[in-house]
Each structure stands twice: as C-alpha cells, then as structure tokens.
Image (cartoon, rainbow, N blue to C red):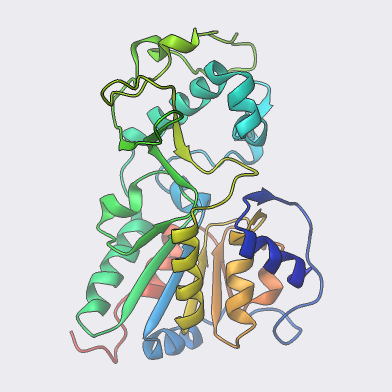
Length: 304
C-alpha cells in the first residue's frame, strides 16, 4: 500500500479513499500522547512541517463535509468536485462552490490558525522554519498571519478561466448576480439551472470565457510547482505535525507516513484516530484548538 501511495504522490492525483492501511511504518504499538516528550522534540526541531486539513477550518465554523455535513443537497462533495461534474452541469457545481465561498468569506482564524502563525513568526527570529501544507481551500491561514503556506488543493477565493487560463483572486459576494441567494444546501432545494452565459465569466479583454473555481477537483493533478515544494519540505523537515485531517484524501494522506518512514517524529492532532495514526510517534486526541496551542507554545529553552 505504501508503494502504491507513493506512486499516487508522484503523479499528484487528488483521490479519496477509505482504505484502512495495515502494517505500521514505525515500531508497532500505540503512538504516545505524552506532551512533555513531544515538547522536547519540538524544542530541537529546526524545520517544522505542519499539514492541516478540514478539522482546522472546522475550528472556525467551516463545515468539514463529513458526518452530518457529508452531503450538499443529495450529493456528496466528490460527486460535484470533479471535471466531469463541472462539464455536465456547471450551474450546479457553481451553486455548490458559491455556497462554500459564502461560508468562508465571513469566517475568522481560530486558535489553531493563530497558534501556527505565531509559532512561525517566533521561530523565524531563531533561524528556524515553519511551513504550512494545507488541504484547506479557505484563506484562514494567511488571514492569521502565516507566510509560508502551500495550498495543495487550491483556493475557493480564486477563479480560473476555462478559455485563457487566467487565475484571479475573487472575494466578491456574490461572485455574479445570477448566484445571489443561490446554493442553499437543503435536500429538497431544486437546482437553479442558471444559463451558462450568466455564470461567472472572465473579465480579461476579449475573453469572456467561463470561470471555474481555482481548486483541485478529484481526479485532477495537483499543481506540479506546489507538489515539488511539498516534496522538498517533506525531505528536510525534522518534525512534522498532522492537524485536523482524516488522512483519506491522497496524496496528502501519505505526507506524514513518508516523513515517519525517515525516522522523523510525526505528531497527529485530531478528534479521533485515523487510518494513519499507527504510523506516527505521537497522537493527541481532542479539539486541535485546545491541543495545538499548547504544543506550539514557547518552550523554556527558547530565547524570547
């Protein structure tokens, strides 16, 4: 499974799996929940990689599209977040993404975002580095002040033209007049069936092409430049934190295990165990808004 997942990583395809991996990469046994031992590793680390998922955004009130929020109307997110779905029904897909955009536009960074940003700024003064590798498609890490952020799944607040390829930051609400008051998630809400020429359009001169969200749909290839940077960070980090991710979406699900395979300490912060928990040296269960700020607080060995 590990070799197969490495192949997925090298290809950079975004895939979702519920496969539970067997056979730990590190020594068999349960990961430690000893915060004092983790803090010793934290104090020594020079290059820290923090992988974040939907659970981090959930701390700010953004639904995770798991459990009770698993469906939008009668569809799972994977049914809508695909090139095929956008080609078949761009109006429905834009309603879904309009709903998601409106959800994140008024959200504020949580204690998790702020703790990570503060840690990055503090350690930079000590000649140490923190990189955030996030699956989240909101802008909350940057709003909190994080500078070194790799967004592997793109951004809800950017668009890409299907004709000219232009990528543009777009925080308009609504993104176009036809989507105003559309996108309600209720199971019995009918599709708006917006004509394609009324959907978001490119504003580049002489283009007027159809826009799509600048996100990585399931089955699409991750941005090669970002993926190269992620691989570099995975190779140089001497401590890795996996925060608020279900570890079922590839290739991100294998980032932590690949680091652990090098013998580097990896700590998971999550409400529950995941299919990758057994790979890691540490596991801290509970709301990451409670556990992570403690983990990243100034260590007594730091010169403040």
